Length: 324
Ligand code: FAD
Image (cartoon, rainbow, N blue to C red; front, top):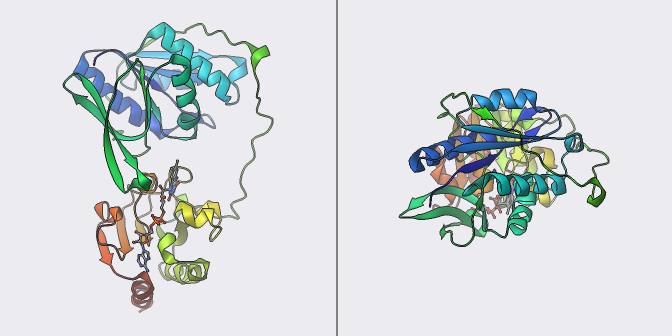
């Protein structure tokens, strides 16, 4: 397995998302190993600032696809851009984030290209001549290794926060603008308005301490206990996805790849198993304390301090200690 590598850059509100740098870091090490080129594709309507920062990010080539129609995200146009860039640039591998963007357009692009896609990957590497990826299944409780076969380019979406983003060596990359043919008349969807969620003033990304509730708390009647812990530590409440999905806490409190990424000084995971989609968004916290009655819960792999026990006994003891 050898060939050029293409990374799909992501941006929102005029800022490149961290996943871009993580993908470039991974792509760079693979391209160096294979002796091939690393290119980054950036799609949008005003790309000058992105092109400037991507040029010195360690890639060999920046491929901007700029068009007035791309002012707002549109999955059909993005899919067309990836499809046509792949046809012109012929990469062996396309890396994108396992984000809402990658989840939506990755499979669509793979179908159009008639090639292979594996999503939700934590790691990728080469064994012999084959590309191997590791991905989570069953909510992160199992990791499986997948050997890619079939038509290239292989499309891989990688979970946020699992690749380092500090190994980027500056390079002065070439910029090559590719002509993409967008047929506006065939567009079936258009963004009318982008709605923002009312967070009620909660911003978990700014909290120094987070007391985070998982499904293991057992029910919404335990939220006041978690609130007491957060208050005793002058922190804020956070939660895993099931807790938000079940309406025990508003989504503004959710940590994970579908919600906020947090880096508090202290993150206390209470009854959270540690699925990859959760861990990816809190693993960079200063100190992680996990309370779980299952000693084999994956959360303990990232925890600095682990307490194996019933949270209904442990949390009151912590509150007592914090208030003492
Ligand atoms: P569970 O996995 O059910 O874990 C509950 C834990 O509580 C268990 O480990 C159990 O041992 C423990 N427990 C039970 N009772 C007690 C007790 N009395 N005392 C102590 N411990 C106890 N998840 C997110 O969190 N955020 C996301 O943004 C997110 N995005 C996702 C996106 C996609 C595309 C997919 C497929 C999944 C996503 N998930 C996300 C879901 C994720 O895979 C997990 O299902 C979820 O994180 C599990 O939440 P949990 O740990 O609270 O619940």
